[in-house]
Amino acid sequence: MDAKLKKPNPVFIILSTIGRAFGRMTGAVVRFFRKLLGVRMTRSLAGDLLNILFLSILAVFMAIPLIYVVNNAFKPIDELFLSPPRFFVQNPTMDNLKDLLAIMNNSWVPITRYFFNTLLITVAGTTGHVIFASMAAYVLEKHHFYGQKAFFSLVVMTLMFSPTVTAIPNFVIMSGLNLVDTYWALIIPAIGSSLGLFLMKQFMVTVHDSILEAAKIDGAGELHIFFRIVMPTVKPAWLTLIIFSSQQLWNTTGGVLIRSEQLKPLPYALNQIMAGGFARAGAASAVGLILMSVPILIFIFSQSQILDTMSTSGIKE
Image (cartoon, rainbow, N blue to C red):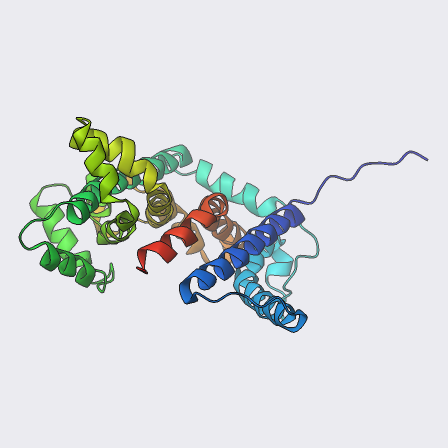
């Protein structure tokens, strides 16, 4: 009898990828708390079992929402409206993703245009944020000037304000600069975010002044020192910035800063589909998978850098 090879189920492939990601993340969390508390983990059997139990419970609670979104994306319409709802998909299908693509292709603005807008805003905003935040942090940490501590205190204070609070001032400033309804209305506020400056400044404490002084004695200029010595040394920090900034910009809808349909980012179009009600329930379930896929993939490839940065930027020995 001929044995037929079964095609791998996309649902189980995605779930196994998420499982491996959370396995790495929980391990990174343990290493972070080891460094944070300065505690050596016990080698006894009871201690190991307790750690495994705690991490397993934590991983389950963190993975449940993601697994539910992945399962919903591959559920047929009849399973989406079951009462009581089922957590795992019984008959996986790709119809929801096909319906989403069909809806986007029938839009008078092509889906490629929405994707280009999001990609441009994400790449430009993230690149500018990393460069300018790193330069400002280098000056703030390695050069002494009048009002240095007061300026850094102001930076820390701005971290307490959520984007909702600063939405109106951002609109007023962008309107005064005649940048409303342009890409710059989203890129410039992302470049000026204070979180990047805080993280980079705290991480640059690890760069020894003796190395910089030796480079200056050898005739190196400030730009040479910054790009050839400082930036490679603080690589975990700016990789973390790339993750945080790209995640925020990837999910932005433009709000009141973008009015033209041709300039709207992809999450705006996807949110419009989600607001379609029962008629677009299948496509809406696929939207959730697309919106969370990019941040998760970026985190999977760079999660070790995030924990390294957070443990270094928040603590000084």
